[in-house]
Every structure is written in structure tokens, then in C-alpha cells.
Length: 346
Image (cartoon, rainbow, N blue to C red; front, side, top):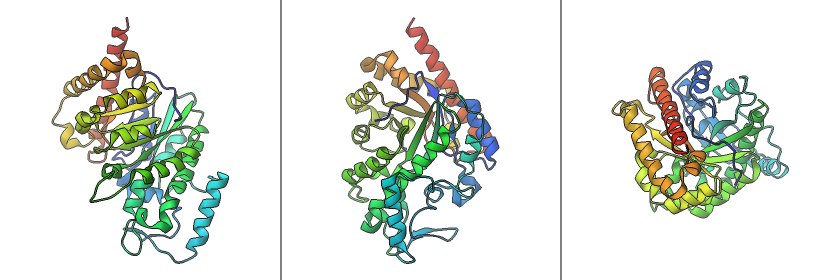
């Protein structure tokens, strides 16, 4: 596991924002997440910037008609796949970046003066979710297609390595790439079967390629012990809805933090409809209650060193002013918790 050395509770976001202007989106991130900013994704600009499609432009056999994303086996597919394998083996990642059509927030963020910022974060679609969302000509997810399954981790690895390389050039102290993996909620499901061995192999491809931090975000309940066993630099989850289930794995959580892993507690609802039903004080109280339970096992210092406060998921179902309220609340909870920790250590 590649740890990042960020200490003290900080606030950050989870991928998407509702903005269509990347400058305004990055301004918002830097205002409320100065210690751990992230390159926002902006799906409201169009389908090309949505999850999966935004990370698909280097997929061999890709067919994107502006509405749907599929693959076919014609048109030099074998040659294209061989090139991915070769680039993976030689660590030649330079050709696996985002073009402007598929990402506007990333180039805007890395154009900012970020020298000395502790950590800069980017989100990319994880290989499991990618493989379950893209279908082949038989209308089956390509994760189940032997011709494509083995390439998913390698393609994601090259893209993630490109992302961290570009972020490192800004002069930030450390980089962190997060794999967005909502489909990990189906781990072990008999309805949508995704095997742990497959997930571990795909994760291994990416973890073996990146040189900075590598994390994972899953916004639904899953086998948390398994995800923690992958030893990501950061595990991001929806603590607002899945707090109870996650804390059932207390021994695994404590062991993970002791090894240097960081938990991103998504305690602030990211959809406006839910956010509007709670107060900032309510959310702070809930987070402090979680913290009290965990510090019984970890102590104050370890919890605060290895915890981050976030919205529960990407902020898309809110307008721009609503997104700012959600981000402001996230930042406030982090500041209040940090202050509480300072008092407790006196």
C-alpha cells in the first residue's frame, strides 16, 4: 500500500460537481478543500464527461455514438489490444490521458498554482464498474467477456499513471488517484456476480502501475473487510447511509488505519433533497458520534490523522449554490472536528 502522509482531518470532495464552467468548479474546490483539492468531473457539460464514458476513449473496439458506449470485435481489435499490453509492460502511459472533450475539470485544476499543496486528488472510473457498464455486441458486460476482461485493469492502470504524472508536474507534494467503483456493491452477489479474485487481480494491475497514492470510492454497502484487505491508500464511502454496516468491521478498520490507511467518511449527503432535511449541527453530531466509537479502539491521534470528511458521493443532483452549501458544510465539519481533537490532546 502506498500511503500518503497527510495528517489531520481535512475536507475534500468526491469527483463530480454540477457546474458547467470548469473555472467556477475549480474555484469552489480550492475555496473549501485547500489542503486536499481534487480535479472535479463535470458530467452536466455532456455525456462525454460522465462516469465510464469520460474514461473510455482509449478502449480498444470502442463504439460511442454520442448516446451509448459499446465495443465490437472488428477493425483491428487484436492489434489495439496488443498495444495496450505492450504499453502496460513497458509502462508507456503517455498516450492514455484525457482529451478536452472528455475532461474539462482536470486540465483546469492542474493549470492552477498548486505548488506545495499537500495532496492533489483525481477520480477515474474503476475497472470493475467500467467493465460492468460497457457491453459487447452480445449485450453482455465486457467484464464477463474473456477478450476484454484482462485488459480492463491494464487500461485503467495506464490512465491512472498518466493522471498522477500530470498532477505531480504541478508541484504538489503528493498525488492520489481514486477509482470510482459503485459496482463493488455487487461483490459476491448471485444476481450480478462479481468475484473477489477478479477484483483483486484488476486492483493489482492498477496498484502495480501507480507510483503515488491509490484509493477507492464505493458509495453503496459492500464487503468492507475485502476492500480494506486491498490496502488502498484511501477508502471513501457513504457514511451517511452506510455507517452502521461499515462499523461492523471495526477490527478491520482499526488494523487498516494502523497500517497507514485513510478513511474518507462521506457524512454529508451529496444530493440536495436529502441534504435539505438535515442541519450542519446534526451532521457534525453524527460524525463526532462515529469518531467516539472508533477512537475507543484507535485513540484520538490515529483517528484524526487517518480520517477525511467528504460528501457521501459526487455532487450532481444539486444546483451550483446547493453544491457550495454541501461543500461548505463538509469543510465546517472538518474544521470543527479538528478543533475538538486539538482540545482533547491538551
